[in-house]
Length: 553
Image 1 (cartoon, rainbow, N blue to C red):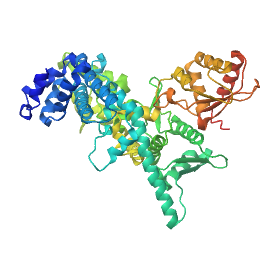
Image 2: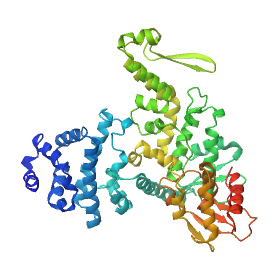
Image 3: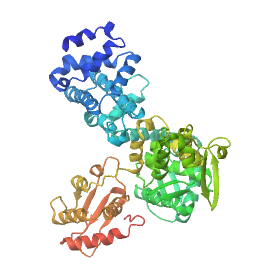
Image 4: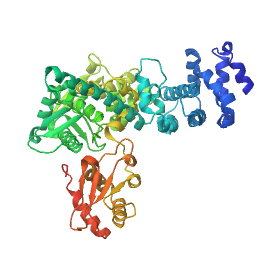
């Protein structure tokens, strides 16, 4: 094996065909998992593969896309192990790590091509999960702030940000925050500089809104301060005292999202079975309201606020400009999608027209009136047959997921990109973008318990603290969410999980008749010293039962 790699190291050997086949075979060798083969065998092999001509790289990627998942996973494991061992050993990013990262990128492309080409399907879990390409050593050891600097440098420096498949969502979130900080600092300094010449301007995006006119006031303020959307957000409710240290903006987002997504407002419809909102094609609201939602999502991302936004996955794919297919329709709207799949699969194909009796048209109801949309010119007169059923399904899918809500979604997209457009957004997959906006679905309260900090006489072993965690772990999921909302101002889990939440519990006297309270701005729970679990649980449930609004003290 060493001799073969040494021979291949000669540039003349790197040609399309036989040499690529040898690379393919060598990378499948399980001995490469042994560290003693890294320096003399795996290092030159990865270096050669990473520097191959584009045609050779494409050929190797195509072959890898056809291998069984177990074999692909083993090759991915070989490269991961090499990067990890090398990074821990050298504590720097050298040419070997760069080569390994690039080869991992070819494997990632092969995995994605397998799904796109239909050679593997997610239904039988044959494709590797995209998370299999995250590298723990890179996410734990690399200075991401410095990596961000290299990414933005005018010099052609290597940066993991150019290879985002190795970065976990939490790492990408940190890069996004570095970018937000850089842009906010730029806006802040610009505001200070302008104040010297044209009068004082705020270094913050300040939204002064009335509770009774929340949407209208926010629309007005956003239009007045459109150039300030990337500044740090400060919210002030008119007629109320208080400084926004984070809790007020959490309440603002909670209230305005609840109003916007109220079905009575008419902008969205709600799917009771799937429990998500979809754009109302018959909405009378102007584009400004839909644009506002996109702006709010972007502002929330830049200010680290997790939102309770319940969209189907296709919204996030559309935000990332991903291609939508029948598989997406089946996932988002399974009744319609599965019906279209039945049409595609129907046999005998010659009886499609007489069995289904369809035409190239979509019918729907609005305000009690039956309407139709032609999928092709004169669609009402064009029957669906065995020859055009594929076109019918494709056009139907495009219309339902895109064309029918084009006006609403384009405004929403425009608002989102006015805040979050740019290179950093392209670091994320659509699944990771959903995590960034909505937080993690994993309510790991054991992790929160391990990460919690204590103050004012409490400690991990204090009897009241032990009773608190016993009571919390016994709560059903909905009450756990209420506790989280009561303590932090949000029932959503940050992208890094509850284990990374800066959560503090302080002693608040010994009066057992006093209810727990919280500084939601600082994720700070104030807990009286209760003597029994029964009393603690009763008082805690009373406190969290009224979680409409934010109790900031």
